[in-house]
Length: 273
Figure 1 (cartoon, rainbow, N blue to C red):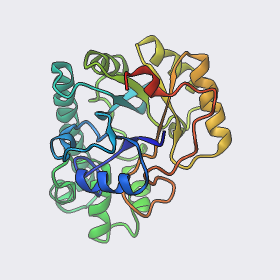
Figure 2 (figure 1 turned 135 degrees about the vertical axis):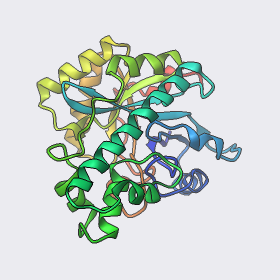
Figure 3 (figure 1 turned 45 degrees about the vertical axis):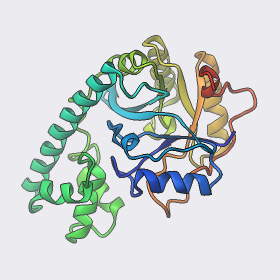
């Protein structure tokens, strides 16, 4: 099973439309795909009917834990669920408020019309930090996207405005109420110590979390082994995703990931296929 259960489209901060993402997944040989846009399920209204690729409805929600921003993916969700609608509405309000606060801070640093500029790059999706970074690049305030994040948008400047996100238990609860599977996204990217990651996983499981991304893009084998062991210790299933946003990012390409360890329980075993 070649599954990619963490991808993004133009409904959030991806560069491909949902239909383009679908075709790219087909070309990559992906057999099971989830489009997990940030706080949005809009992509699913644009997808054409498919027969040769299993689509798992998904979403990626932002939350926080001990003052650290954490992302939780919801997989196999009921798109018509009232709980999901409530979650998306709450997160959209929080995202809009966050964008306004980031724009205010950037304006105070001399950046002209930051919210207008970022909105132009967001297109149909909600405004996020990548859109501010693209705007900063376009006006010459930053030579690269990485520089834009480092100088203007990282946690020590204006980017880590996490207070508005729903809590971790609330996010997990909404996903479970929508019939979905809550998954900790890319656990290695939070740069937590081993003990703190253990603690996060324990609290996540206690709240009703069911899986972690044991594989996220092209990661080192030792990371995969450690995350697989972490999942087993807490009785969690193992998910896999590229976190694809656009072409050219070799570490996050559709369907290009290490295989799950043989002793890991795939997250799709939780569903009736």
